[in-house]
Length: 296
Image (cartoon, rainbow, N blue to C red):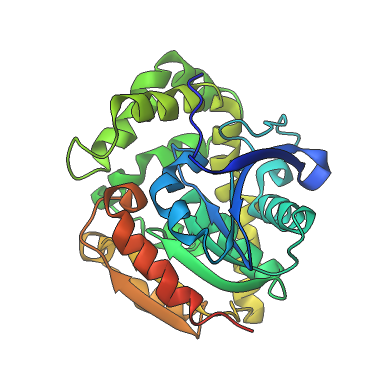
């Protein structure tokens, strides 16, 4: 597997929930910001943005469990890769580095972990940044008709254990590479070495990636429903930056997010899905603006 590291960051192996080993890049000093990656990527997607904050913050950039060089425990049940478990991972590594409170910014899958962290650990999360995703419950609700084909992989990886893993392993490089190709706006976002790193890392993690997605169609969805029923919300400042998926799928993203996050700022961006790599200066600005609203 092609291993890439963020320049200027030191690397540690820290323990998450159930003792799973997590690969964590750390740099800087001061209050903590945790940056969580999406699919089909690793922590390396933050390389351009992370270095912008090390003069003022301790920047913590892990590989999520099941991805990159972090542990990939066998799926013993939906809780193994539930976002509750993965959010607990993040709190534990932050505490291991001396931070019981932190800002949290996530892209795609990492953003879903961030939402669960904000709901489950509101005392720890000082602000929450979301890049290009909807909450789990709302994602499934807005996918209707032929336009839902944009998220075909969600349905494939929601199937019972066995068939989706076998199908994906059969064409692993093509499967994972197809998302890198389809979700960027041009062919310049990923240098060949970076593209190879993401594809190789994902091919090496088929079972755990599918388990992560499978949890989103089961236990994660149940958790969101339970929280919605009791009116639970994200109490910290929340910022969302996203493509305008609503115009294609027929929803108002800001309204959907506001139901979960009363203290919300929402902004669209003219970029592809991989915006932290395509437009890092704009994402760094987004994080700075959000961090200025951090709960003391």
